[in-house]
Amino acid sequence: MRMYGMSPELAQKLVDCLMKIVPQNINIIDRNGVIIASGEKSRIGKLHDAGLSAIRNNRVEIVTSERGEMKQGINLPFYFRDQICGVVGISGLVEDTMNVASLIKYTIELMIEQEALLKTRQAAKLMRSQLLQEWLSRELPPQKDFIDYAREQQVTVTETTQVALILRANGAGAPDALRRFGQSCPSCYIARLREDQLAVLFNGAAPPDALRMMRECFPNCPIGLGRAEPVARTSHAQAGMAAFAGDLLYLERTLHRYDEYKYFASVLAGCGRDAGAHEAARIGAALENDEGALAQTLLCYFRNSREQGLSAEMLHIHRNTLIYRLNKIEKLTGKDPRSELDLFNLICDYLVYRWQRAERPSPAMQ
Image (cartoon, rainbow, N blue to C red):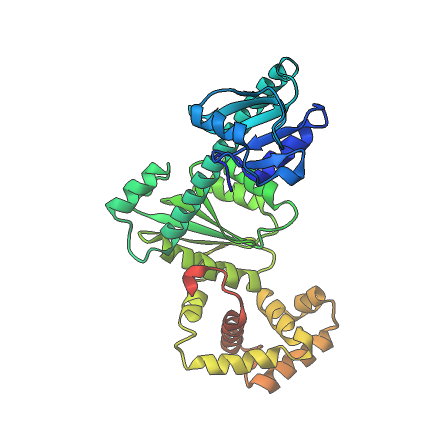
């Protein structure tokens, strides 16, 4: 049985702690007169007659002589917001236990108040999280009822929303990074989508200082940035595709703007309906031969604008090894990576291949 404002587990911990100081037995009794915590564990779950009487009469109940399991002692009701919610009983002579019982009563009341406050904060945090999740998943621009409800949660929703998506935001320093970024950008709203993903919502366009702080606080995390859109879900999806493509194509960068990847994003958005998805699967499987060495070579070659010497240096291989791999890519795929057009098609196919097999970086893309 659960007492309002305090769990039996918390009540027992309190009793165990207090009985290291107080020599008398202590019982904590719920509103039904049942002992939920006691120094004598065998009494837990039993009805406490004097405690029940104290609750029903809303008064201190004193037992002057032992009657069966009922020992001599004092039973004081305790309250939460002017409502009786239980009784604390202490065995012993009244003159020896009154002061201690009063102190324990006030301690319990403070703990109940603290636990209630914590639950209120947790509930508010949960409601805010659910609100942000709904904001990100709505398929139409927010209407007045949603805007008004958001305002009640101290969240402002304007005509456009820009979303940044932070991937791999679950490293050792992530909690501190999240706290620092939240303090530096109080006007944005942060939603944890999964353990390793954060969505940051901005009303209108994201301020440059906020983007700078985001990169500083999450220096090793890929960040996708969608456009400012009337529907947050759209910006969220754009951010997810930009983060995915940018993380694969440009390792030296962390912030990936949708406008820089919009062609790649359009390829990814249509890959499930495009007959070319089968070709992408064939190309991707071929590139992942040799434990992914061919894919790694292709991506490095693309990043270095087909500069063979620089690519070989970045891969820590001989130039002849690079040429061998490029020839092997052409043989396996039928496309020559030394051709600008073929290289672009290979990159698009490989992106689609990885996208189809990856856990989506954004729920909005499901």
